[in-house]
Length: 148
Image (spheres, rainbow, N blue to C red):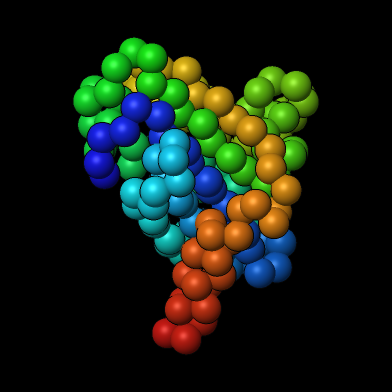
């Protein structure tokens, strides 16, 4: 990943069946819209919500491995865009979480954010504005189905 003062991350996760075969898609962009990096991956059997969380966790893990947070100033910002309002509201603490798996995902996210050492904003966007990440999810699922 290249250096940029602010980074935009779009993530999506989905399953065919709920639960069913699932995949994630992650798109990293600069603040001016330049594509930096994409990632897609099948994650096995999961629900839609689990896939959404796994996508954002993977995005932050990739960010940490890239050393972006060390190479950019303190004023740099990380903004994550998701099309799941439920996940955004849960991560932001506006909705209560009762599900044990989801609580574990939120704990993992908190640890990753602490390790990054910068605030990470989570913002809900309409599905139409998340087409690139959604496309990656479907590509991963289609490729997985072809190999079976």
